Amino acid sequence: MAFSPVSKLAVYRTLSSGNKVLLGELAQNRQGVFFQYDTDYLNQYGNASPFTIKADTSIQLAPPQPHLGLHGLFGDSMPDGWGMLLQDRAFRQAGVLPQLVTAMDRLAFVGDHAIGALSFSPESSFRLTDDDDVNVFELGQQAQSIFDGQTDEVLAALVAAGSSGGARPKAQLYWSRENTNSCSTRPKKNDDAWIVKFTSANLALGHQEGICEAVYLKLAEKADLNPPEFDLLSTPKGNDAPAWLAVKRFDFINNGTNPSGRLLMHSACGLLDADFRSPSLDYEMLIKAAGQLCKSPAAAKLIFRRAIFNLFASNQDDHSKNWAFLQNDKGQWQPAPFYDVTFSPHPFNEHATAFCGYGKTPPLKVIQKLANSAGYKNWQQAQIDIQQVVDVVATFSQVAFELDVEKKTVKEVQEVLDQRRHENKHLL
Image (cartoon, rainbow, N blue to C red; front, side, top):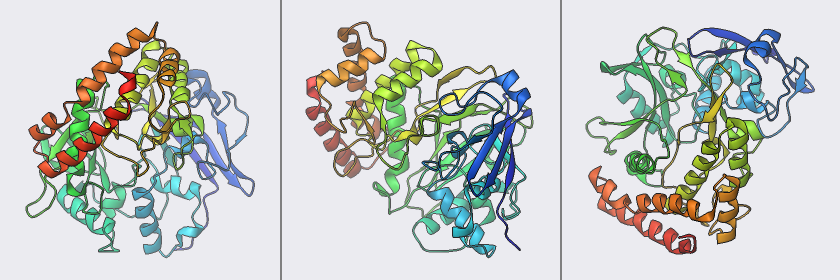
């Protein structure tokens, strides 16, 4: 098949009703990638990316970095890590070198499989044909084989299910609560959308990764931090993982119709042009952005409390793609649920998102400054919320044993959590 780079794409947004509206158009030449809003979209729905894209119909050039030459709004639809690996395999199988593939080509490949409300047309002809109905166990076993370097073959269904972000093996699947044994790579009427996270012996916690993330999601729920819904899937006989974690997608609206509805999802990486590959985001910036975007003091305080959770729970992979906001059809924003929250210590005990410049053990005055930015009336009020979060983190071992996490893993994690509490005791 002859390959020529994509030069133009129409960008559509799926509304909560399931209807699609034209958002605008992307075009590429030697200067870069340009975007132009559709006039009707702007008049009816407003700006989808208020910090970096102007709310007019001018032709706007994307910055060269940090979104591979795309505007942040569209960079959010791009895969990274795992999804990029699957795309590269698919292009190679079609005889196309990945080095020749542009970011626009990758958006065309994503088509209508992106996380969030955006879709891109025309869809790439290089996308592998896939059957709608799939077996999650077969996908999981093949994903593990690819991630572990045991095979170069890629199932079409795995590519179709692999557009979500992140570096770990996973699949974007759909099933209904009435029939959890039947899943597909495209939504049907009454389906919910899920991201299934597979495990590997090569992950930091090995095959305990999924169940440990489930513990953290339970802790986040106890701390009123609004994590997404999740389920633990039993793995096939002979698989080393006790369970795979399935996280329900919060951008997807099961309204009993086909097509289903969507909410626009925009990461802090895309909103603020904060490169998730390097420490480029600060909690002070994130808290202020939440307050301004959501027009709500409660939103800023929620980000503050999540920051405290990450500090004491050693969730140090808190980069800018792990923070996001949702926009409804009326243009109103709210913080997305607290996703990708898990035990993820950095080798040098450094957070990806800094606390007013501090990557670890922030001084008392720094947390007081963040509390003030979040809108707390006084430090005593903030301390109540801090203590509540810290008390919940202290129940890690109890919750982990309830979910049958291995004793060895519980001990390893608890030792780090005890260390984090000792390092930050000046905040209590």
